[in-house]
Image (tube, rainbow, N blue to C red):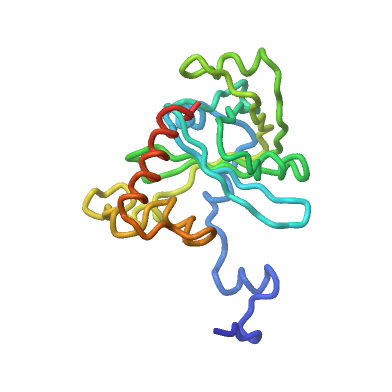
Length: 213
C-alpha cells in the first residue's frame, strides 16, 4: 500500500498543531538524575529494552533480563547493565561503539507504568564493576555503563490497552511454530519430521538451561 505524500507530517509545528499542546506535567516530570522513585523502580525491574542506533542510522531495540534489580545504580546519574551470554551478534554493543546514545525502558511485572531513561553509554570490562554482577558463579565479560541524561515515568495507557499482564489475554505459544522452526524455515529449511523438530527444540531448551550465564 502506497503512503500518500500529501498526508505526511513534515515538521514539528505541523505535528504539534494536529496533536495539541504537550501536557505541562509531561514536560515537568523529566529529570536529569535518578531520584528515589526511579531507583526503586529499577531495583524492582527484571527486564528492560535498550534502544541503540548504528553509524548508518539503522535503529535497534534489544531485550535484557535477569533477576529483579539486575541493573545496578552506581549513583544518581550512572547505571550499570550486565551483558549476559547471547548469540554474539553484538548489535547493541556495536551500536554503542558507533553512537553512544541509548534509550532504556524498564518494566516491572504487574506494573502498568514504565520508567524511561535516556543517556550515553560505554562498554566496560573493569573487573571491579563486573564482579558484583556475578550470577550462578559466572561473571559477565563486559557491562554497559549508562550516563543518565533524562529520566521520567511513563503512564499506563499502552499496557492498559494491550492488557499485557492480563492472564485472560495470554496466547497459546503452540499456535505458532517454535523459535527454531521459524528461523530454520526462514533460512536453511526446517525438518519435515515432527519428531526431529522436537529433538532440535529440546536441544535449545537444554542450551537455555546450561548457558543462561
